[in-house]
Image 1 (cartoon, rainbow, N blue to C red):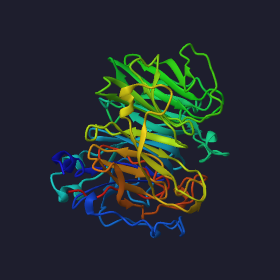
Image 2 (image 1 turned 60 degrees about the horizontal axis):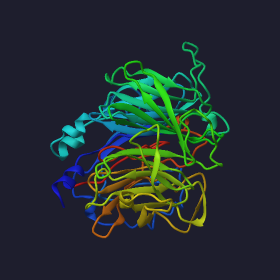
Image 3 (image 1 turned 90 degrees about the vertical axis):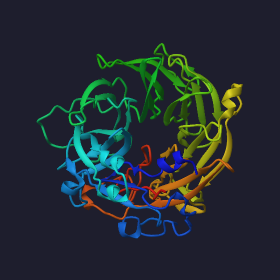
Image 4 (image 1 turned 30 degrees about the vertical axis):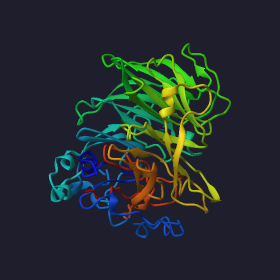
Length: 487
């Protein structure tokens, strides 16, 4: 095992949160390599609302837990009985901080849109004892000026000075708003529930909204920031299909805060002149942009649900072109490895499964994207190397056993947020191009019932997304998150 891989797997599992809880954990002992896990007992055949029915493999250790109940370190106000009331969604890390988007916020923790946590103690740790002594500390919350808005996604600029929030109306996700908007009248709540917002976080203790684009109905579900030839761009995915779905591309001006719309892309092409053209009802979900050292230009990997995975030449965001494609159903999220694996351009694409009748919980696909080097002629040039699934022959609804988001690490692992399956840790092995599970963690700490999100899922542990340079996960409903021991 290389020194780089050993080091990258030794530090902290970054921040992440859930319907009232945030947890971080890291590997401190032996490694992911403690052996494959047997998931046959994880059939979901138990009371999902009973947090005590969940656990982990022996190669995972929880280092800390913060409920996001208030600012301060976990030891002073981060216990499960002092929670955030509502739900949390995504998490991203940059440097010493983790940024958690707040899905919903109700009394007595009203009007939150973003939480910022100091995670520096984990990176500064020099040994296992230091890791166990480190604490997550909430340093600030950003107000959400519209209680009807769910902050679905958060992304961070490369220098860590800005974050970008994707906001959608709760009614775009549920038949009724949850939670009921607060009765506080000390602040105007007229700010659109559908918005892409730019937030200055250069002072993490005082985050400030500096720019907003809200000229749409249901708003963006996900977004990605990338700097191209010295210009900041934000690629925002508007997923709800009202004939305006697609990927919207913005230039971001740091001086004025303006988010200028410069393009809208669907699989039918660019519509940079502002023309609105529908996409025949095909759902679009997410995007990740990466600088490609071999192609010498950025590539945008667009998860286009039943239309599959598209790879786009993003060297000119106003003139995007398809350079690769892979056919699959329900492509929910796709992410390239941060570095080539044994010289190969590798991408992982994952499904999301709303419900199933005696079938698969959902697949992750390990893909060979070296075909991008040869050009695109309209036929698939991204090939499947391996397929991984957590469960087969299962029946469920409400996304309970589905995979969701994941993180492909420099150390050769895929950390998967698997909804009720918790956080699953997969080894990406370049010797035989396989994905093999090496461990998992599912929350066991519960929070007060009235603090949880209703209308989304009945399972207490409901892991939303692992994120971070090592790992991370958001537990939507109540609980925490972790990462495997490393060594």
